[in-house]
Image: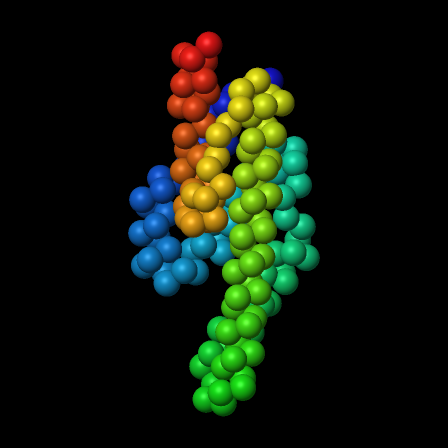
Length: 147
């Protein structure tokens, strides 16, 4: 059985700091955070959340969509919007995969059910996943106190 705080220590960023970094870098830090966090989640939970080709598709859709936004042609801008929405959907899918991996890890390794609100997961995406990673030790203590 691994230590419940291992994932929190590996992640090592507060949610407010994550928000500020994403704000300052105009969202670019989210790419770094997703890549770093998915590797940590997969290493500790032993559950695959994202393949390398999935991440490349996400980057390609995000890059081409952003590039198309800068062009003046209306049709190309609309295509860029579609590609950006598709990259956003890939993030939503990854967030729910990470949510499932965290919940399965808490149940299998630490014998408690990690409660992660579906609405908050959809609304706050990677911020909520980061918050739940940081809250894992406290969630386990709260669960054990109820017993």
